[in-house]
Every structure is written in C-alpha cells, then in structure tokens.
Length: 427
Image 1 (cartoon, rainbow, N blue to C red):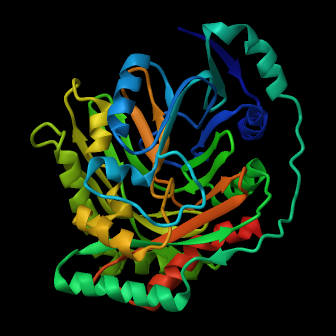
Image 2 (image 1 turned 30 degrees about the horizontal axis):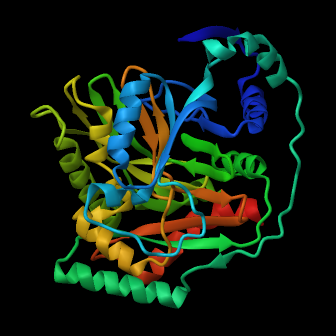
Image 3 (image 1 turned 45 degrees about the horizontal axis):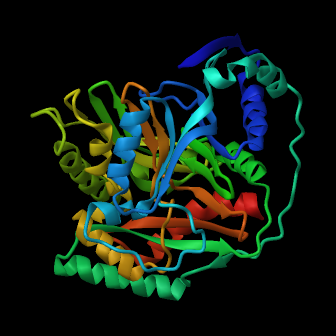
C-alpha cells in the first residue's frame, strides 16, 4: 500500500525545520516533535503526515463509533485529534459555553505522505498513487528556507478576571468541602480577535523556547494547533498501555541553586503530591476498564521532570490489554484524561462546565496517531495556541488543579506561569 524510501540526514535539527516549513503547502498537516527529550517510551524523533487521501471530521455525537469504523476500514496510519467535548459522546454531558474557534470535535486523516525521523535516518512512506514524487519532494524539502522574524501587535484579553477567577475557585472549593468532588482542573482563556499571525512561525518560536517531548503542529485548512505539550495522554505498544499524567508545577530559575531548590520543593510539596496521587488513582481506574486482570501498575510515582519553562511532577501508569481490544475502546474508556478533568471525573466535568466561561474545544483534548497495527500515541493538548485563520480568532487556555489544600492566589499565579511561554511568542 505504501512505498518506503530511506535517506540519511546530515543535520536532523535543520531538516526538521525544513520539513515543517515545506509542509505548509498542504491542507492537512500533523507534525510531531519529541525535541530529543529523553524518555522511555518513544518510537521516533519526529513525524510528519501531510495531504489527506481519506479523512473523518465530525461533531461529538456518535464520534467514537464513527472513528472506530473509519479506523477498522482504513487499516493504515491515521493522524488527527480528539477534542475535549467528545466527553459529551461518552457521558450524559453537554457544552453551552462560548466557542470562538469553531473547530470540529473530531478530525483524523489518512495521509498520502509520511515522514519518520530517528537519529540521522529518515523514512518516507508514500501511498502508491503519489510514490513517483518521493525524490522530487526530498529535494524540495532540502531547499533553504528563511524564517521571518515578526513582532505581532495583538491585543490579548483575559476571559476571566483575577477577581472572578478567585470567586470561581472559592465556589469549586465549596464543592470539594461538601464532598461533591476531590479535585478539579479549572481553566481560563486568553484570546485575541482580528488576529493575523503566521502559524508556522509562532509554532517554531514556541517550540524553540519550550522544547517539550510532545510538541505538535496541526493544520486542518484554516484551523491550527501550535502545541508545546510536555504531557502524554495515552500510548499503546502491542498489548501494553502507558499513561503519564502531569500534576504539580514549579518555576524554573536561571540560578542553579534556586532552580534545584524549586525542584526539591515541588517533589516534597504535600499539596502537589496529593493532587498527583489522586489523578493516578483515577487513571488506574480508567485503565482497569480494558486491562487484563491484575496488570494495572504504577511504574513511576511523582517523579520530577525538568523542561525549559517549568519543573513538572509526572507519574507513569501502565496496563496490558487483550490483542482483540479495539484501540478506540481504550481511548473511549479513558477520555478525557484525568489530569485535565478531576475526580470523580463526571462530577468534576459538570462543575467545570458551570464555572468556566469558554468551551475548551481542542484544548484539553489530544493529538496523535494510529498505526496500521492498532498501536497509537496521543499527547495532552496543553501549553498550546489555537487559531482559526478564517475568523482570525486566536486562543490559549491555562489551568490548575484545585484541591482542598489549594490557595486561590497561588493557583492564579500557577496559571500565569503556564501562560508565560504563549505570551512571550505572541508579544
């Protein structure tokens, strides 16, 4: 079904930039970059998928069943996203908040052209109908490009004021003290109207200052995701499932002593550890729906990982599934990810919907791919800019986990810390 051509690459970092820039000519693009971040579970340094041969685009109604049929019929590589509001397909939930982005709830495509980079080796996988373009495309990709340096004049507004944020978090704390929930992820939006930006240039700047392991650039015609995510949602390798929720954030410092102190304080912080452990318990429960008996394990608990902008507390939960279990069923029983909802999950999502003022859309969703052998890998869409080029609406959201130990001022400061990189590349 695909012709495979292997090439040696002299400078992978330069080539990745050339590859992502070359991809802009296509209507459908997914570019995934690990930024050479050391991680146990990884297949490629970067992947590019372009130019849909077939695709699926739908709202949340019956979305997982439609995706299941599409994936089973195609039996090929599929790239795309699951938006947060697919929760409405899984549970008796709804969304009425404002949505300035107007993204489809679900979008996947079967690419005509695929690129996999690992070290200095590039594999090009082309469908037979376009495999005569392999050599000419490789030459075109290697053509020099010049990235423009643009200073954007955007008026970025905050959807929820600080005063309103504190009131809403206090309302959430009342729910926690009543026992309605134990934890919930509360988010707020920053946005710009009449925004004219170059999505690929904004993405490259964001990726350069963040260097996360789950970076993603996604284009679906006029809809763009510019993602610097440090978090994996879910990965399937054969019969093994891996989830790596993040809960716990601390500031980075240029001074090595201050930076190490910040890291150590995060590791020992009882509030951060408790919120991470609560989500680990939720993930264990989610994975148990499809796991073979006795295989759900916590492989790593509350380990600190350092990124360019922040230190993060990450846990790794794994399980095994039967080879007959559909990959879509595994996603459906674990989505949305616990780190972006709370516990208990359904109650938390209902309260989130009441208190937040913006529909999350692709934020808090997942971007990734399915392989022809039913494996998959998806990130969590955080630290990301969303852009609708048609209506010129630009948006990014940030949030934090609210627990009984939360202090409203500190939660607000954590949101601003997470927004720092997005502000930096846009202003």
